[in-house]
Amino acid sequence: MEIFYSYDCDGRVCRLDGEEAAHCIKVLRHRCGESINVIDGNGTMFRCTLISDSPKGCEAQVEESFAGWGSHDYVLELAVCPTKNNDRYEWFVEKATEVGVDAIAPVIGDHSERKVYKTERAKKIALSATKQSLKAKIPQISEPVSVKDYIASAPEDALKMIAYCFEDEQHPRRSIRQVLEQNAEKARHSVVLIGPEGDFSQEEARLALEAGFIPVHLGNSRLRTETAAVTAAEALYFHNL
Amino acid sequence: MEIFYSYDCDGRVCRLDGEEAAHCIKVLRHRCGESINVIDGNGTMFRCTLISDSPKGCEAQVEESFAGWGSHDYVLELAVCPTKNNDRYEWFVEKATEVGVDAIAPVIGDHSERKVYKTERAKKIALSATKQSLKAKIPQISEPVSVKDYIASAPEDALKMIAYCFEDEQHPRRSIRQVLEQNAEKARHSVVLIGPEGDFSQEEARLALEAGFIPVHLGNSRLRTETAAVTAAEALYFHNL
Image (cartoon, rainbow over all chains, first blue to last red; front, side, top):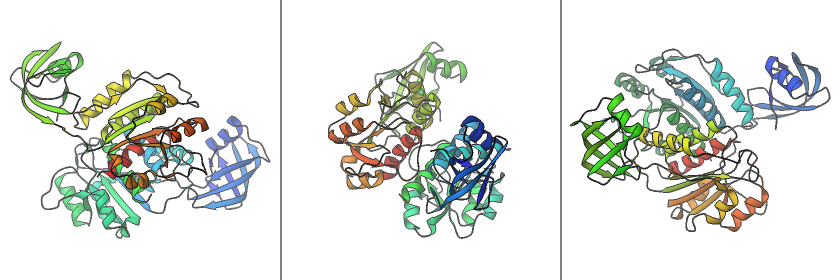
């Protein structure tokens, strides 16, 4: 099933621009009168008929719309420190999108080796994985902020969790599965904060706990940052399966 | 924590060969008398003292041994069709090893585009991910066989599951989570069969069901082959968390 993304959809006509139009018209050779499937990136899929077929920009008339197409019934925000190796982060973006994530926040920790992160490629990967996994909503990828700023501005009413690796006798960690099961209602909007290769600093962990983050572990395996992030997405996925 | 792999461990002395010795002696500059951690690849980790330090091959004397180091208390075998893009399969091998898998069987399906698969690189990746995730047992990677041969020889007493995508009214699929929960005892030894991009053929699915495989789905998302395979490993991981 082919899916195109429209940057401009008013519910009657969807416009494909740049790459999408070129792919639709030039590569796949669709022509006026043919049926195509278009997502608006916000959760709706439209079955459309092409009404103009220039490879520089084409238009399709909406025949039928499907709100919440390929959606999941929870909201998951993953705040994850960029990995040293950029490919690994991009892999996480792809896989989390396939499994289900609503927002990805690249956050820079005290121990992060990578202090700068450009979101452009991640956004492209998220779009491509959204289409590939038959969803209509593209996860939002925000511009990087520090872990501390993220903690300070994290959504108040969400179930906020932080996965750090060090032992903390005062604040013993429970498994993410247990925390989700014990907070089923609140877990409908979950936030998971995942640190860099060198883990969070003690201060970051302290600030997170003060801000209401629950310390969780992801099981006994020592997971790489990107694997931990995907595993957190899988935890929500299975919790809601 | 640094981990070395020994191809030859008699419980008293561990021998490192080739790459491992070069890494230990040449790169990390360990010398006789120093302490190193060695795994035998079969589940035991040894705390050792180096007693010879040639970069072509070195020896370490066992001081203490830890059986079942980093192990999980279930057995998981993933039989997964190689993906068109080899990187994606290697990524699955790495991530499944981190999360926990005991055996990986590359299987070639009727609809597989890739009919040949060389296991050499996957074995290296499995070793590296085993060390990185602090485990002592390297998942076994078998030589490729056809899906049909795999089905015919799959372990009798395991909980065998097949994840295919097509609807089958006669054999409705349940979620893997539900099947694991309803077969908790048998699930201690689980097998999951994952098809290629083009899914299993109807005949493969029929043979699998006849051989006692239970049809499962992995949720509502359309997952790529490698994502499905990692998601199956995550299902077992969370089932046992």
